Image 1: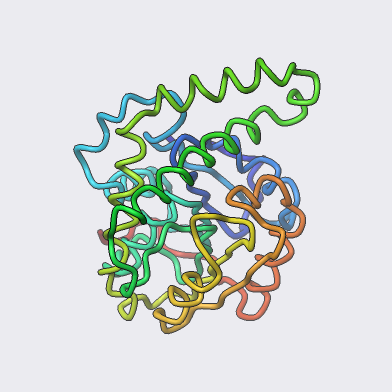
Image 2 (image 1 turned 135 degrees about the vertical axis):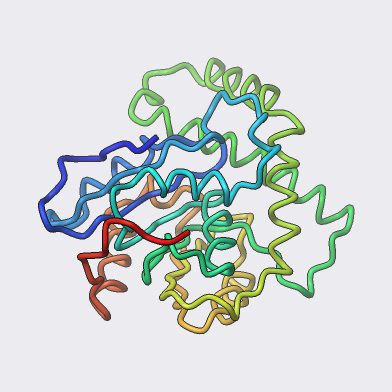
Amino acid sequence: MVRELRSPTAGGPLAVFAHGLEDSWESWLPLSNVLPPEWSPVALDLPWRPGNDYQWRRRPSPQWLADGLDQLDRRPDLIVAHSYGGNALLELLCARDQRLPGTVMLVCPLYRPPDVAVTWRVFERARRSFEQHIHDSLRSRLGARLRAMDADVVERMIAKAVDRVGPSGFLAVFDQFCASASLRLDQVTARVLVLAGGSDPTLSPEAARTLADGMPHAVLSIGDSYDHFCYARQPEDVAARLRAFVDVAPIVTGHPEGVAT
């Protein structure tokens, strides 16, 4: 389902946002509020939203993202995708899917450089990072309400969320992380901004550099204070980096209504 993040602007660039696992389309609201007023931002409500039953795993995540793009009345001018949603977008980019625009932003995607072997140590580190992400995601969604809540109540909520997501959620993420090492990044023709954080335990600056270097037209931007949810916690700074990237080669609007798939 497509959700308008604010009233659309006639003739303005269509910017589409795709959320990560156990995250919500509403998480993009802070960022959308500080984007240029001429942009028309919409978010996709994807099946890996909070509270899902993970039955969607029977289909690859890029297919779900493609389904969401098919609901638009035209090809977007820009796509911004976070974490698990970013990897779904990355797979479509490598496949040169014609639904995609020529400008995209990947926020803290899950990437395994080819020289990083899949070991039990990597598995355990990924599991710990995943639990931390559930923790941070819930706290981020609580927003201002968090300050008025008892710390013990918050911790019990987080523990319940981790138990509810369970192995199915972690394995969805870990599978995607493992598979990313074999993606044909050299096939990506779009301009890509890879946004990474110095405080993100999932995507190190070194891995982010390997990812960006593998794509012909990619730029890497690292925020030293950014964590995995930087786009929601520091929307003004993220918006400034996105605008600077777009301003180098402005996005072109006016795509035809129908696009080949």
